[in-house]
Length: 328
Image (cartoon, rainbow, N blue to C red; front, top):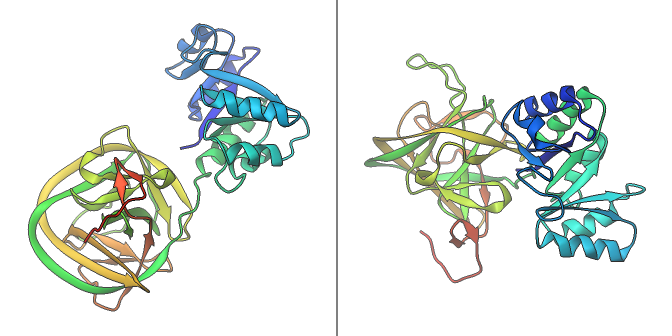
C-alpha cells in the first residue's frame, strides 16, 4: 500500500483535519501534540512517532552525489526526496534501488507521476499544499495507485465436489464492485479471480464487502507479489483487490469468517499453466469472465473461460523465492 503523507508546516488545523479524514498515513508537523488532539495518526516531528534525522530523512536531489546519499539513508529509514525541476529520471533511479522513497509533491498530477515511476512507483508521497481540496485529490490518486496485475484467461477443465471443509469469507472495510475480486489459488503459482458478493440473490442479500474466497489452505495474492494463507488473514490486514482489467487497489480486512461448508474443486488451464482452487459449493460464489461478468460455480461447466493470474511459484513466509519446489 502506498504511503500518503501531508506536510502541515506551518500548522493549519483545517489542513490537518482534512488529511486525517482523507486517510493520510502520516502528518509532518512541528508539534505532534496538536495532531493527537484531532485523531490517531502517525506523526513526523521531534516529539512524534517518527523522528526527523533518525527515522525520516529529507534530501534535495541536485546531482549524483545527493542521489547516492538518498539511497544510503534509505537503508536506515524513510527518505523524503525533492527535485528542483521535477524531472522523473532521479526518481526512477531511486525507485529501482529502494522501496523507502517518499516523493515530495505539490499536486495530484505530481503525485501520479511519482507513484508510477518505472511502473513500480515511489513508496509514497509527501504533499505540501494550502488547499484542502488538493489533499483530497492526492488521496484519491494514492488510493488508485496500485500496480496492475497481469491477468490470464483460463479454460475450465475439471469441476469436482470434494466434500466438507473449512472455507474463508474475507469481509473488507470497502464496498467492492462488479467485475473485480481477489486472486486466490491452491498453489502460489496460479490464482483465480473470485468475485465479491455484489449480486442480488433470491435467498440472501448482497454483501458487497465480502469475498467468499476459498478453503483455509489457499493462497491469496497481496500487493508486491506477496501471498498469505486465507486462514492467516485477520482484521486490520490489507488484501489486494483486482479489477477484470488488471488494475488493482488495496482493501482493509474488517473480519474473517471461517465456517464448515461443502466444497468444490475447480481446475483450469492456460497454455502450459494449470490453476486449481477449492471454493464453497454454493450459488453465491462466482468467478469472473474476461469481460468482467461474474459466473456462479453452480452453473460453471468444463470449457468455460475465467480470469486468473500466473505467478512465480515457491514461497517462504509469503515471499517468492528461487528454489526447487512442486505444488500440485
